[in-house]
Image (cartoon, rainbow, N blue to C red; front, side, top):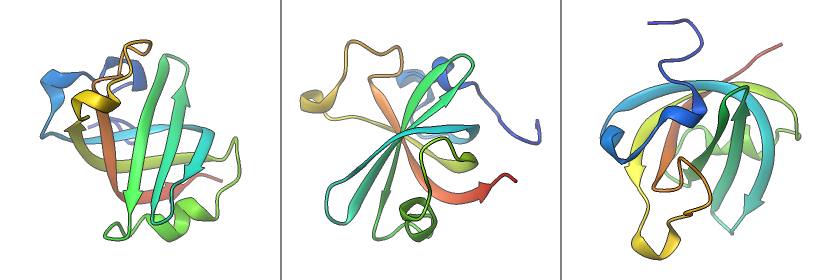
Length: 105
């Protein structure tokens, strides 16, 4: 396995659902929905939505990050519900539930 990623952000799709992946990139955007945090992670190839909820040990770390922080996320690929699919993104059918995070210095 590559030290910083198993996949590039733009290459994850519904066929990866259930897999544990490692992604690295920049925090592009954060959205806090009260107990659930959504982070758009960007690399040179695209963007993937990362999700952390109260069950995720990565939540406190993600909450403290600033935009453009460089991170590595380990998590599980999950399918988005039909109502939340984003057809404008290549990765719009999935999201990655964060299980661990490393902030790169």
